[in-house]
Image (cartoon, rainbow, N blue to C red; front, side):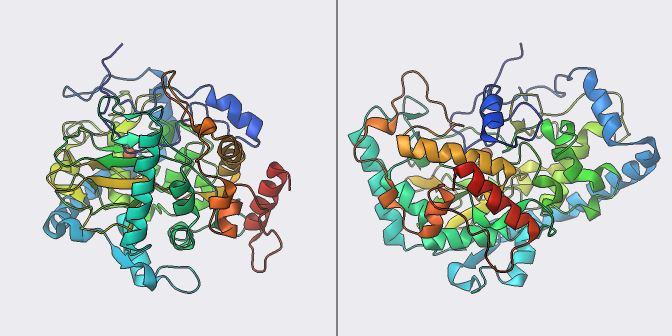
Length: 474
Ligand SMILES: [Fe+2]
């Protein structure tokens, strides 16, 4: 078996599901969880070429790209490399300023970002919203989370010797932060970067809880986390009914037409549990302060990553080899300079701009990202992971289990504890329903019915709210 490089500390690795049947019920989802393996591990990126996958993956390539599209694909590859080259110059010149940033107060009364900003966020695949909550509020939450873990030494973290990511899911501060009205307003605006036809089974106005951890990375601590994507790896090619159909334009040699924000097929993609990962800043964060780095062009980076297995190193169409360049089954999608040379990762990946506690960072679930190796700031780099999770079938299944976990004080289903790790069920001071700040927060935790009779719902929205209510027993 190939050596596996494990990251010292990771941003969350989301949605590792190892089979490809979209779950319709919580029972299906529970069965699927049995297959969750190896989350947080990457293919070994040493060497000029990756280890080839099984021969059957050549058939996957042939299923995705038909002979009628070979010439178009070849031409599209050349256009793509040229476009990347030009864009990398722009990104490098702009640096962190290339990450679109907006004030929370600019979100419209209808719950959307200003149109110009939304366009930029869609193009780049990420955004920062400043002043979502006050600096005092964010620092108070952080102090409460840290104090909770100090009070409960059975709560462990990663890496074990000197934890940075704490495996606490239900502290009162986390429950408050997730249900804060301003956080929910942000999540709705972020969800609304996506779009869906009326009949698509998704409700972009409602959120489903996904409880995650928080991070406190001390100043001076180095970190090794390679460029990667959340949400699985090989599923982007192999999940025929769902994920791979998101990328039809790319498979047909029309990457310019690819829309990363179209929910039509994403709502059914098995690994696409989220609208997108995100975190609330609990400290000052920014360049050289040990923070996240993003490759801020979602269309070009996605097209390149997906087409890479179809081309030799000298740019010839290759329908036979099974090099998938960091998309090993059962592991996260990882990238490397040697395997993805045209992305020029050392120039195209930039840190987020300087932000204060209380700002919210969001990135598309197919976005290339990493963490700064060095932390040269003067305070710890701290964040609460709070992803954007619109209501769709998959997320409804998860919501039912999140509610169960919350009420019992257990880790959520994606985060099974190691034998030596304690859980929060016997912590009297853990978060309870009374810590939820809003009615919408209660809904996102499955404690209140969704309004399926609200005015203006699309048929797809209505179906999702009805399904959620049914699954939750309302
Ligand atoms: Fe990540």
